[in-house]
Length: 326
Image (cartoon, rainbow, N blue to C red; front, top):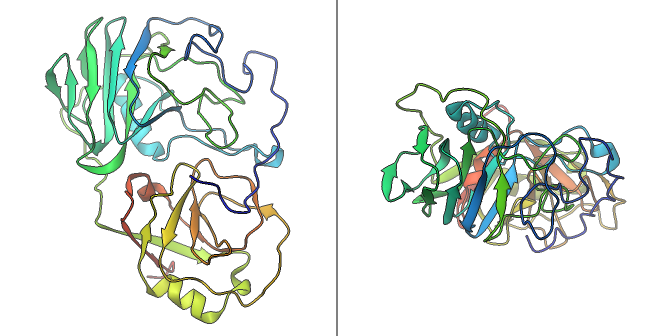
């Protein structure tokens, strides 16, 4: 995203030097020219022939470090990643790939099982069609291609054994704001795989999360709701907004009725959480997502209960807010 207005980027804490460390880039074999070999057992690698527009390594994130200025990060739809992991026999918190707008082309150097969840896309293994939401056998040397979503925005890919880049603060997630974890995945990267943990799930069909044309989000009053006029609160709850193209893993910017303030002046930076609806000087709301900063200097008018639906919200998607009693 092109900046988060006055939301401040936190100071990065010192990195641990023990096995859970690995430095600010997270190590691993991702980008072999820029990272060390991971510690511990691995088996095979994913060769990234084409990364797609925005692909990152994600697990379930690193919550609990906000007091040190570290965002939670992790998959934008944790349930979708956990499902992909269960389908291939991994623990739910194993690291996989989050692909935005698809376009990935990957080669496994050893035989394995993969699963793709999330948006509706074409999946092919050496040209053979596969299904979203089912475990797929991939022979050694076969090429896995993930197309562009027909609906929605993102997919999650799990491989048996998980992606074995070194963890930072207990997580292998790429944090696009702070720079913690491995760098975003690029063409030519080689991602190390861990040894398979168990057999793939014996399923024939799974139910994915639908991608609605209009997204309804439950909103609770924020710590600075009193900084806004009654008309602002009425507009937020009574009019439609659309997702701006200037959105990413840090936050979803919305376009619609401006939210006028009742209190002018500056606000000292204070803590912000996942789902916080911050309102910059232009009056257009911004919903913080997984890579959000831990502090920000614009007032937070409300907090969204569940931001998972925004993981699939393309630019132009209609967003409406309602109170918890709707």
